[in-house]
Image 1: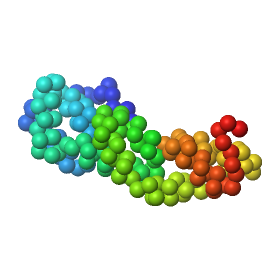
Image 2: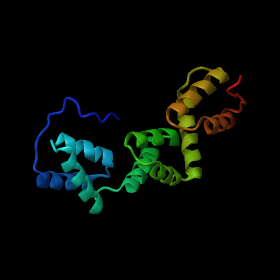
Image 3: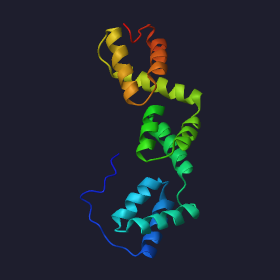
Image 4: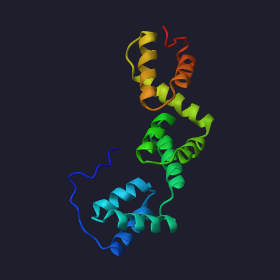
Length: 170
């Protein structure tokens, strides 16, 4: 996700109206402080006004970084079947602290994580037309790593699934 505020029409709102709009916006869905800051700048507020409104939103619990990280990680894992690495990188783009990122990633059940990775492997293997085991293995491994799964864990599970023993050094 790219959150640059370029080529967007800036509108100017009073701080009170901006606060009201931001409360509605944050109540609709969990937002990161970074997203909220960009939205406030898009509304035409100056830096000091935006920071004051952010402080208000945080104090009134409309913005909560840990809650955002937990919701983001859980949603991306459950719905899009992203691995921990991709979730971590996306949370870093949202400028979430490392402590909140760790908490969010620890909230993912390791057993469910392996099951989801297994289902992703099965789907990918069904789509690969080549019969060569090495090609199937490396195509699937590359796909899993691109989805954010850890390469060691993906390689081990993939070896189990297709009954081979390929390693990165071969």
